[in-house]
Image 1 (cartoon, one colour):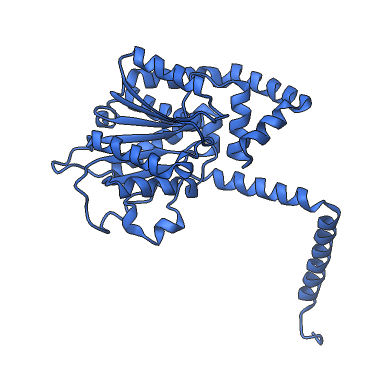
Image 2 (cartoon, helix red, strand yellow):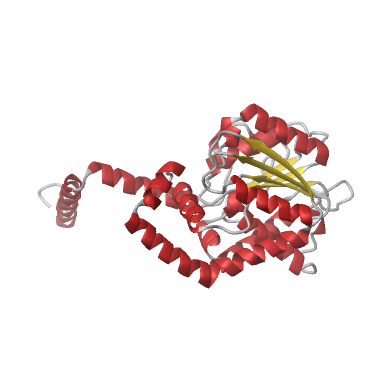
Length: 339
């Protein structure tokens, strides 16, 4: 054509210009604050749906982490040949909370590795696994299959016998319960008793025997929406929102979550972990101190050795950030008792 561009290209360019003008006009009509808030919420939702891949900070320093499991369950131990092997044979498996992202668990992976753990696996369950039991069970099964293939073996080729499970909040406990159920109910298909026997479990800001409506709304808004706990409580105090949430949670709890939660608790009770550590804060507004103490008393009644460490300040799953030295010292004591 004479214009230097084909007619089809000119038409495509005109259409692109029209679309761009419409989009810009739509953005002008929409309040900027609302658009930014919606965009942030969408990005958080998408990112939270992806289980942990190693954070960029750790990728630049591969000697600090020796293993990671990605969302496609195909990642091998990229970093097992880097750095000097420690004398400690402890393997740490950390399971994130509802809405946690890779950058959140990266600092815990780094802390455990610096304390001498042989291998550290950090995993964040997907959002579907946090809401629906069927998704959670399938994801737990795939997680175990990957763990069995990738976790380091002892010198005689047997699976690791010193494992620390680091479980965060109620969301992490829910996924952890599904993992335990797979181990307990399918011993022939998943012969991994070493992942329970002689293992320890560390709970960070949880768990509780049963979530209340208030616990659930604060957990969802802080985990998914990125809001702080006070914002979530203030929103819940407003009558229209409270009525909608209470109605929806009542239906979800009675139809699905209540039985699921009971199964998770039963699986953990049957596992009978010999050493249990509870790290929590008095300022937690997602899972309150009384609920965690009630859970600990239940485990003491079952004969488990329970050790608790309570901080007076700090928000939910923010203890390492708020009390880094004390928190790391506590982890050091735990790994010393396990090794």
